Amino acid sequence: QKEVEQDPGPLSVPEGAIVSLNCTYSNSAFQYFMWYRQYSRKGPELLMYTYSSGNKEDGRFTAQVDKSSKYISLFIRDSQPSDSATYLCATMEYGNKLVFGAGTILRVKS
Amino acid sequence: NAGVTQTPKFQVLKTGQSMTLQCAQDMNHNSMYWYRQDPGMGLRLIYYSASEGTTDKGEVPNGYNVSRLNKREFSLRLESAAPSQTSVYFCASSEGQGHAQPQHFGDGTRLSIL
Image 1 (cartoon, each protein chain N blue to C red):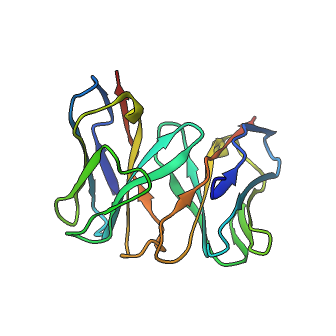
Image 2: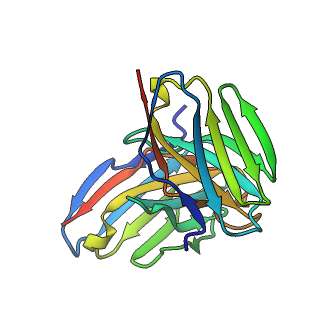
Image 3: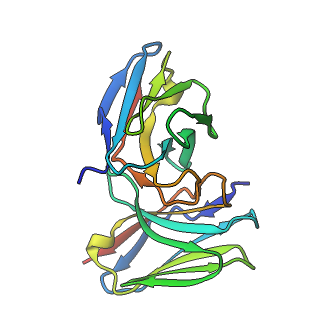
């Protein structure tokens, strides 16, 4: 079993839709949670970074962590064609290495 | 602001050839990392360097060597390339010596081994 599971998609939505991207993880020691966005033929760029449980909002993006169910979510409001990319969740425990999900491909249609 | 720069962007090798991938960062970061990205596998850590002068193995180190040349530069070497090493290679850096710091990535080197 992979330490971080992520549905690969692709997820296709119309412009303006609310998008929900999700990951599950197996190690209860994970404390740090990140979402990276990766455009085609580019490197991942950090989108959201949270510590422990709870929500974090940044513009149209909200990251949510539920440690009790080992579930990580990223919500995108008012999705735009420019949001079309692969979204990678990542997590780790302090002092250890980042573990990435395989990524979800998102396509926002105009 | 360049961030993390990787060279070359593309390379095709024959089985058994050697190759060094270069990475440089201009953010004065202490830690640097090499990953490979394969379809359906996500990013997997090959080697990392917590600080200048130190290197450690990651999840998939076999067939690779690294050199932390100075604080800015971290190179990845394939001594005898194999088709299984066909992948996209990413270099990353982070500010702190621990892995809790967010990592910043370059745009990758696409490597094909025939």
